[in-house]
Length: 285
Image (cartoon, rainbow, N blue to C red; front, side, top):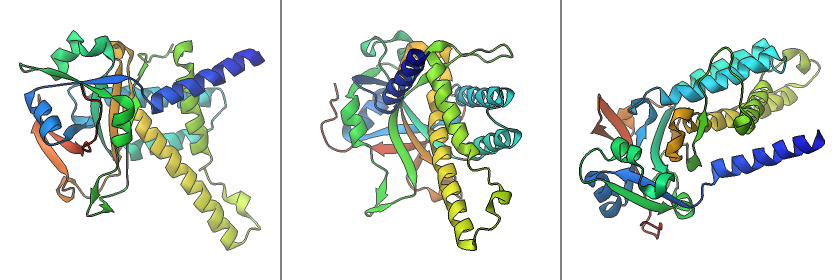
């Protein structure tokens, strides 16, 4: 049994490392406009996740997390208050602006499905980037040396989850992912503040405990918000996708975000960020 636990922990560590630090050559499929933007302007577009062609993508991850929380409650790993905290946290994340750009390892950049999806006009292009160089180049946007706003930006591996149903059971191949979500939920659980535990403490001590609790909650919420756009239905697993993700807390609206642009999508106008690629060797091929 100890050996099995050790194996599970080793797999969790290995898979999280792959999630956070993609390696190898990553291919970005695009059209002429996208290619010129990358080569001439040194920029690549990240589109708002709510405006992607398949709007159900975002909700695959949400459903997976909700199911894990439900199973934890059934097994008494989480109480009703924790379940409510997860629900509230997901609703808070729903207000965030999440932008993504897709890359792939599939077929060395020559996947027919990806040509169809991302290079719809002829000629199309498949541009290879060195993952390590690209990841190291990503930095939060600045304006006059100052941060535009608090944000998270990074390159992460997409994980594929099954269709959910009442008889849903987690496959061993993604058990590590369920463990990761479970650990995040347990961290959220710590934010369930119990006033009865504060009896006898000074006001300063109570304030300190609340501050620690809220800092932990904010960290776990951010982790969950980054994980959500990285969970896709297993039917897309052939894409072997890596995503550039930029996360921003909701502000007053697009009009107050000078670095946001718009482009025509298949069914609506799509908000995007023009992510600067520094003039360094990104291993483009």
